[in-house]
Image 1 (cartoon, rainbow, N blue to C red):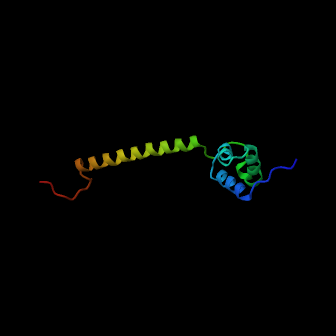
Image 2 (image 1 turned 90 degrees about the horizontal axis):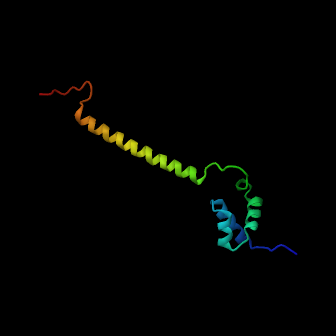
Image 3 (image 1 turned 120 degrees about the vertical axis):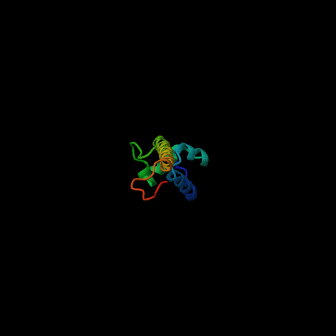
Length: 100
């Protein structure tokens, strides 16, 4: 029995979706293909995506980083506001203005 041949456009679309980060199962369902076919294409044409081991950045890492960025931005905003408030109350050192 000869393996089924798929149009090159279909393979290209599947590989493009994989390169964009879509999971194999989702691509297989979306294109009506067997997930094993997708795995074979990925292994053959996108070897850098087929490496076993932890990925450099996972969704959880990204969420944690975004959460930390939000936290730091709010801290920075609080510090800026405190600086504005203190500037109105405490004159700068060495102020040359005369107070009467």
